[in-house]
Length: 258
Image (cartoon, rainbow, N blue to C red):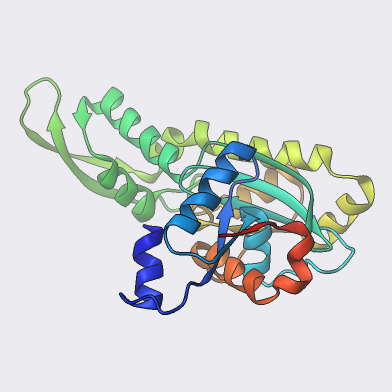
């Protein structure tokens, strides 16, 4: 994949080898970091830098991370959810869990299988999540038709599922994501915690688009929660900005020349 994107930028002849900035989860080991770095060099990068995803997300969401005040960002991706407090271009404290959009899809698949004896794929589950999914019960309940294979008869079958059922189905993975946020707030130094209460937390990643996720986090933690303007692109935009301001951020990056 890296080779494809580098080729798309540089062309088939690859007259120059680009510098590459790659975002990685905060919980990665040194072995995993080295593997990602080496892959970037082998794919055609001249130099490869790694940046923690929450730091990239905060940068991409236009948060003032270069100031001494605390800025809290929650990044809900496909495979992992991460929360971090960022200050002076660095992560002060962070927590992560390997639960994200994919686990939410799996929870919907499992719920429909148990309740309706209906087999649906993860793509259908994602469509359900986008169409009627909500972290909190909706005032006006929505519903949609779902097609799948009956586990008993083995034949195609159509059911109607409501937003309330989806909220019930995804309660466990959503609860784990909320738990990460609470754990971070408990670990945050008091001075920075005061900044977070004043400024609120920024929600990024695809999971930020789940209805009422911001309201649920505000309700549970008491800290205002805002969704970034373009949550799905924040990490990518932030990684690009980090590359542009590399001279400022250099001391926080792991770097090597290939």
